[in-house]
Length: 312
Image 1 (cartoon, one colour):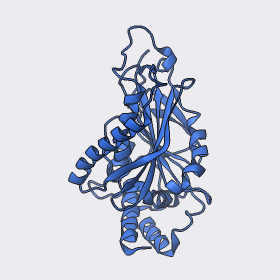
Image 2 (tube, rainbow, N blue to C red):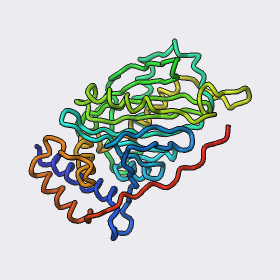
Image 3 (cartoon, rainbow, N blue to C red):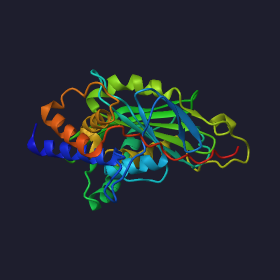
Image 4 (cartoon, helix red, strand yellow):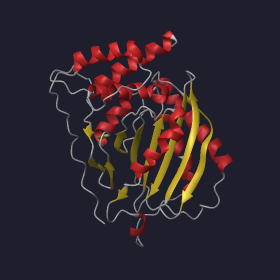
């Protein structure tokens, strides 16, 4: 492995370990992410919920914001939860961030008139603009290259799905798989980031987890009643607006995320086997981090209660 890339990965492992740890004595200013292990029902901002399977980790609104900041991603303030998958011998870990946008009821009248070429150009432009902020923070930039999966809308589930293929300024390839789930009061934005080499292998498990997603009673798309707020745009604008998510959910995670999550699960003893390929060098790093930040009998900190669901 190239020396500079190895250095970045070592730094990234140490950074995430610092963010996830909840040791008795923690340096001032060091973020602590309140992870909660599955199985459990993850509450998503009082608008929806999702079943988190055994072996997965979930954090709520505050933990998601800390996770994004700690991994050099901009925080929108709309985040309501995040899920991290465990690793398997044939599949690297992935993570997904949930955001709720209170834009109102989005009509799907333009579902048959989505201009894929124009949208890709719009996303590329939006990502370039987001990179300006990333440069100010001395973070990695990201360039969208093509559709990994063109936009598709399912009128039965009111789910809008697409995937973007891109590359960071360091040359790391990334795939951002996005879903916009339409609800009565807005959209639940679901953005998946994973190793591009694992995209096809990981999608079935991700899709399986997403089948348990449901809006709370009164927040479903079918619960719309006359007089409810209606969004000023349709499906096309939802995809174009995804440019920000593509840029913000990448950062240094694009290629090194599998190492970060492997460290997390190993240190929390939620994995039996480390991700293949870490090697003796990284195992020594993990051992040092475990000794410093994870005393025995550590208790996982539960996230604060989510806000109450809005009334129908």
